[in-house]
Image (cartoon, rainbow, N blue to C red; front, side):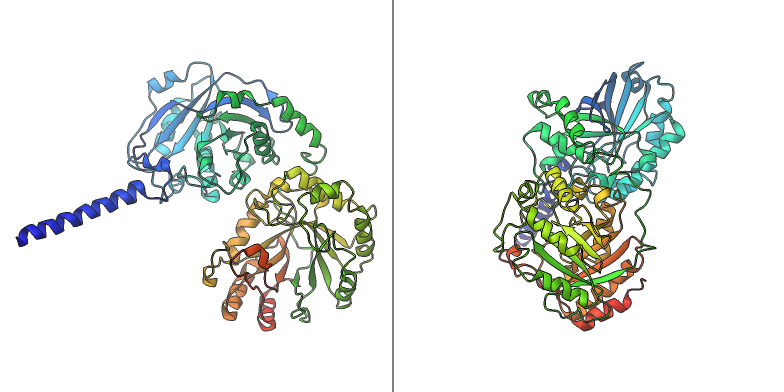
Length: 572
């Protein structure tokens, strides 16, 4: 009886272990549905995506589409593979070919927990890729290589998604291999066109053409960004995200795209949109990409504070004061007195001007439209009359954090050109702007920020916010992100905008010793970032209404902590 019981216990434990293994490897909730397909074989087959058109990114004009065949090469790490004569025959004799390359993990599961992108520069796939490239040397048509598409879409539908630096390194490795064995090959960078795609751009010297994909299945996983039912608006937004690039573009649709959706694309309307905004929205004059961001060698570094209770402004390290005002309540509050009081204290000013309607801060979801209609012109005139008298530098920041896909502010989640037009209207309103006024474009620094970039001619500085909490649901202060991680991620997103960076808001919550250590660690990054010209601490609790049922974080620090932070900054 005891033996039977032991056998029962052992078999039960084995059954539970097997069930746990099945759950972990097959049903694990964090895996995308696609990961349940364990068997990823080496294969070379016609690709399921449909090639729709070729467009010029410089005009969005539709171009003649040459005869192109599209194939997909999937590679795993487990099996050997050679590109053979039958594969060569399938390419045809004269047509150009686009070959989408996919680098997966092992044969038996796609290895979503360790990134196969690490193995690309480690030459894991080189022998297989080399067999392809060598076999194609005598092919008469143009060969396009399209590595690991849709890399920018979050959700891990593919194991190569969500890793900008790793993706770029892997793409460059494949491009170098192709250049050595098949120098006539053309490299296609293949984002879906999702928000933030520019973070994954490998560089002009590596990219010959670009492709985007409509209704890509990997976009069904993330929910943070809206999906547009209107295919023409959806395509406009994808093309707009590529306005810093000038290569030709191949437009694909997924195999699941409905024929009637594809047929509804109005290419002439897209070209007319580009023409409408070409003078400033798509002008290379206003969107030239520098080799590196403007450096701050000739610009003094400034430390500032948003300090409504005047607890830190007396410290000699504080050289700026930050004020938030709205066009609606400008003139109704005591802003003019505060404006001159800050200058009397010997401080420059940051003015963040928010387009909120009235002195009661009644929300106006049409605030940008109302600004453009002239509703605020009299207030704008009075505002500029005041700030143009300033003897100190005024950093003028307009309607911040516009790119976050939420509705905390009434100017968020708007069409990029509505915001761009409103920003330019505001910044160009004064015919005789004082040289003391510096224009600041202030995104949050989230993915896709550059969709709302208003142009080099109306931006002197780029600002973004750095707060330790990566998610408002995190209440443990020790779970806050390091300043360096946030700064490097957000500044990387600004790499195509040639302006120095000013952090207009930053803060950390928690016990004083934690705040102090976090800030001192931050100075290591500040001291080694020449493009960073200023930083402004938010010495106040956050706005309670923005946090719902969660207690708003208090970013305030003591004068002693602020002094320790300032002393650790080694910038002129």
